[in-house]
Image 1: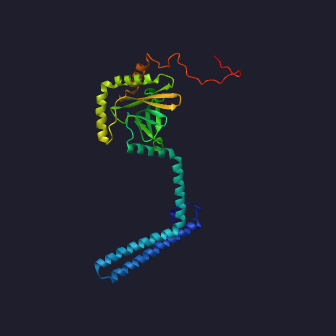
Image 2: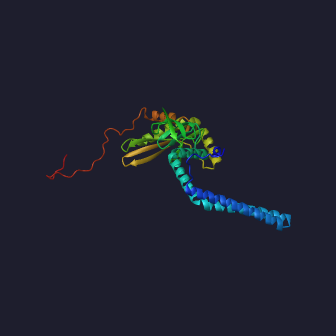
Image 3: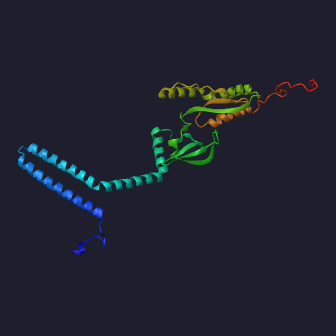
Length: 301
């Protein structure tokens, strides 16, 4: 019958160190329980006041409990330290193995907390640009727009890991819901008739935006009042940039309805360049520096 009570495998032997710790733990519990019983008995016999007796009993019980915990820490301290190191090693390995997943979850919480964009917004992260059609805890799906600064869909779908939102800035091109601004540049050489092109671009932009210019002005006024911002000028404008000594860029900014950026840009470009190329006039050659005289002392005619 006693053989049936043996639940340990045959030949199993406790390690000497573990057996010593178990014996010390049993002795600790025995000493604490005995001391608590003797202390409680002494308090019940010697303390007359019920309130004081109850307070001492509770305090003694808590004291012996703390003493037990301290004894366990002292007895099992080395084993607990080894266990803690193992747990830390496992945790570090887990973090390294799931680093990208953790970054994706962090990026999802970041973009949700900052409300950087919503479904339907046009965003750009690094070189990825498109309209948001789906969001999840790990990735954001966009319909690609481009290439480059073009405002047209390419028909491709891009799945952006949310980890990019932790380290990369997000450009939201749909900050205003109904109306916004669109900026595009037209490069010219310094010798081209860029002054006439500047006037033509401004006239065309004014004609294209005239039907809804007042609606844009009212909308921007409301948005600025709600967000505490200065009201931006909504009239079309053409400014100059000189990225190089022989290059001129006409930077055109026009107010547009959301979803019509490409339409307005192409309408302005088509109207301006349909009949004019703005090339330099024929017969106009750049002035060259006078060449030095020939060896005979006479100049070329």
